[in-house]
Length: 171
Figure 1 (spheres, rainbow, N blue to C red):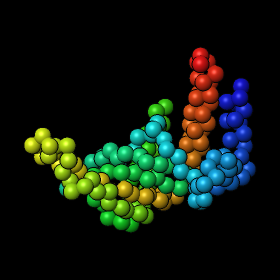
Figure 2: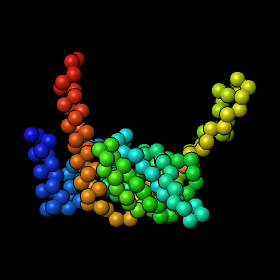
Figure 3: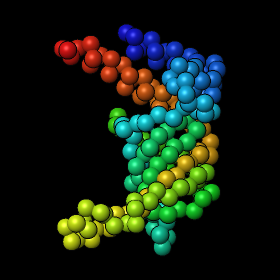
């Protein structure tokens, strides 16, 4: 019953106040230290791919999602991409919903793992190269209201399921 009431309220707020206002209301008390325009969440229930054309064929590349908001995502991957490049992104939720969004690389940082050689391997006499990673901040080209609603609904569902599990499990 509480979940259904939350969904009705979510739909009402989206129709009457819009995506920006809805995100502010939901994230209001989430994180006092996060002073960004949009709160970012760590979500392990979303898989992200970006698509790249190589010799006129389209290939999906899996990336590690670091955080997400209604305005963009941050991810980590081993491939070096150009800043300001436009990416076709595929965001796949555990419930089967998939959203295809376009996003532009706004930030790029290189995360080094020492000199690329695993120090534990040096002791054993084997040299195992660890890949360097690139961290990317992607800003969506436009905000898809269906995506935002699903992102928020899945957040509420995840929170509701966690509370339900915590009240059912013995301490």
